[in-house]
Amino acid sequence: MDQTLARFPADPAARERRRRQVVAGPYPLRGAGEAGGDGGALRARSGQDDGGTAWILDQAFPASRAAPLVTVLDGHPHTLAFLASVRRVPCVSLGMTSFGQSGALEDVYRYHGIDADSIVRAAVDLAG
Image (cartoon, rainbow, N blue to C red):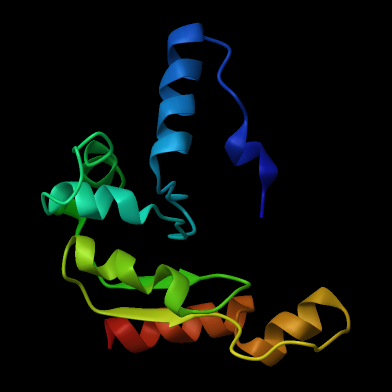
């Protein structure tokens, strides 16, 4: 992953906005379509929390851009599966369901189906 995408803004107001976004929850990478998440924001939207972080869901997953979702994590795939419920979209969650394998990172990711080819296949399957 290109780490320059996470470069901190020089402007103090933009830096504070970035800080609030990171603390609040999901942070999609527009080109890659990859996101992490915060279940607290979903609880806030459903009235089970004080609503302090619900804004991040509308910002990260705007209704105008609702689309099928592929989540990818080098952890259990269910960890990010809840993100599809933000806009009730079809979802394929990729991740590791067994542990203990070792090897080159690209080989282990391929073994678990979280390599680039597997991500593309999942996206194509959803779009099909």
